[in-house]
Image 1: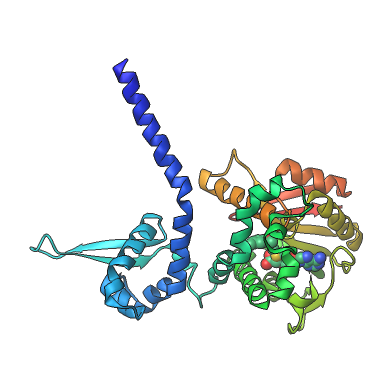
Image 2: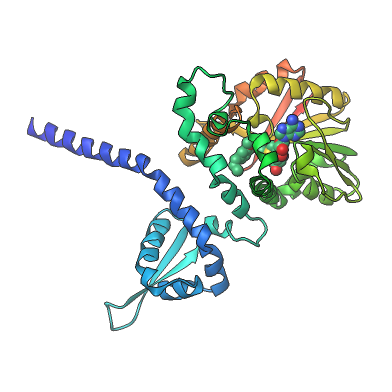
Length: 359
Ligand SMILES: C[S@@+](CC[C@H](N)C(=O)[O-])C[C@H]1O[C@@H](n2cnc3c(N)ncnc32)[C@H](O)[C@@H]1O
Ligand SMILES: C/C=C\c1ccc(O)c(OC)c1
């Protein structure tokens, strides 16, 4: 009896710790936000070797009196695996331990001027436009107003209108997308069978052309068009085989051998996806295809952390744009209903897969 109660006590406190972890996980996000604001990844990179706390403080041009606080921030970030820490033992003087901070593969992706970089993407995520709407999820679900998204409850307009009226956020968001697409560079060589042989490609919702620039350079014989909202493609410079067009994908999609939809369908509801996919089907020939780069939820196969990131993304799409993340069954239904006959999934982009969809 006693043993059982003891166990129950242990279980309860484990449950409490679990709860604390989830209640406070935003603290981890905010420490990462501060680390970026302070420029910690770049400071470590510029130092050229693992850096001690006093050196970090002076590199950040910070008051030495703040050093203790930064040490605590770093302790959490090291614990989260965003930075690494090495402790050097000075011989003989056992007590003297000098901790040095280093980058990890994750924080290496947060360097400002390295390619690929997730720096701008992270800046966009930590902007109020992305953070605030999730505070309104509950209100939105309960509200009898016809707000399309929690984003509208928070800002009184939809996500893309907000972007067109807030150039500062729009810039961060679009640069974030370019940075995200920059990571495709590393795997483009594995994509010969996907893009090779295509004479033309339209990147629908292609933003500032992050993906299309990489593709048009890797395949110089391919004519590429980026279609995006007018304010997004304004002032972008065409190249020999890459052209930017401002427009609305629900109205018009130019014809091509292939249409690329990268992270576009997950921003759309099923009805909106159907509309866009039908337009894509009309824009390609019988020999053409639609290439979708997007999230495919696969709880059985993916590691717990990967599924968690995909589910975070899903709720984010619900908060910002009424989009959603889909599993293979849901993708299949969308494709078949839009009149496509078959598809093929290649999971090559980490969180995102590449789906080739055929008429
Ligand atoms: C999540 S972003 C993806 C950008 C890009 N494909 C990438 O992966 O880097 C979605 C894009 O769709 C664009 N978009 C939204 N509504 C659109 C519309 N009605 N017509 C064309 N583009 C649109 C946005 O401006 C944005 O660039
Ligand atoms: C910057 C983070 C937000 C975000 C990321 C990917 C998307 O497709 C998106 O669409 C609204 C928003």
